[in-house]
Length: 218
Image (cartoon, rainbow, N blue to C red; front, side, top):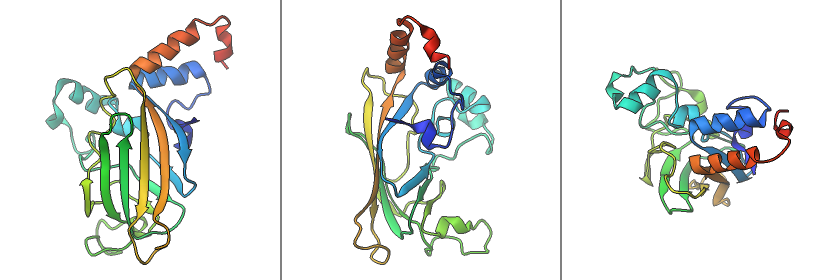
């Protein structure tokens, strides 16, 4: 499986050392491995644990630990409606985004978005308008859903699954537009596995039991 950190363009520890990368995942409480990605999905911050994980740094980490969410300022707090951004390799109009845990059956995200211009969006030149959020290729992080059975990405990736299993996920993006590529029903899919603290700890113990640990220092 490909590294989710590599797909993010080097997000995470940014160090080649297996030990340091693994310790980073242990500290964050989870790790992702990508099994398949459709070429049309060219970017996302879905696996950004600094944004959607339990350890988001400084004030937010402390506030979450002691239950003082109201003590956070607007710059410290991630808005509850904020979701991962997606970048596609072609232009589309209305799309559905569905993320399901195939291990437990839990539906984590099921929403409909307008990637192009729409009446509910700010017009170009208006205050708060971002041209890239209406170009048909970007799903911006604060784009409001217009439908779906689980329209908000909640509860993020925090906490990690409490069981002893790794969890397989499938993200599916479907085309709901009759104007943009109507012949294409499924735009793309992303298949990945989430490894929790137990799997990470077990793999660390396994690697530590090997002779010649210097192989992991490169």
